[in-house]
Length: 323
Image (tube, rainbow, N blue to C red):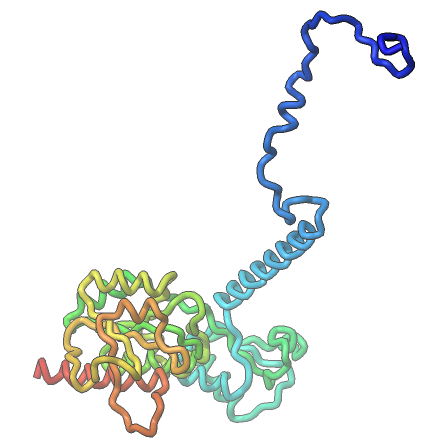
């Protein structure tokens, strides 16, 4: 019984001779090969993270479009509204292309002065329906008057430096870092022009630009003094330094006092904001950090005031050196 090969459940062999075994065509080997790193969740179309990534991408693209639109608007004509602001702009010599007056606007001394000034200086006077002026200003706070100011034409930083170095007087330029208030910008432009400076440099981003507010604060100096914009402020300052100018940063904790600094040579005064001060890289690349001696109970000076103090002292030194 033990040798009976026909017993129930036995496995019968077809023969004892071994032949070639049919292969899998490499399928088993390929199945064992590594398939690389698992794709990120956001790269898998069926995964919720993929949908979230698409939504985030659309939001980012929309935000970028809004920024481009805002920049385009900022670089386009500006409309100054309100009777006092319009008159102040005209008195300050702000360049304007058109004066808008609402139909039926109440006449007063400011309206009369604005219309007379526009007529005398070749500025177009356009009478428009009030609802058109409402639509143009979006807030209706125009008091029946609006003044169109064209975009400011900025100078090229390299051209401005070369012009300053070629001047009969030692180059004196001002660079603004983290200055976002157009009134501060206008005041610095006014001080730079008043004390014999050759120009002002501002960054393209995160900075105040030449708006009607800056025009008014500069008291017309923006029409006489070049203002340049740098794509990268730190890189432009380094290029200027290689041309032989001294970069002097202003900071309350500076290592050199204004009383001890010789500002008679080619100089760029770098001014930071009252709150943030100078950016780290800009500060590191300055040749000197200058402090202004002030009373101990005063924490700091406004950026435009500090710039005016330093420019005034440098102008005094230069007069003494040439006198």
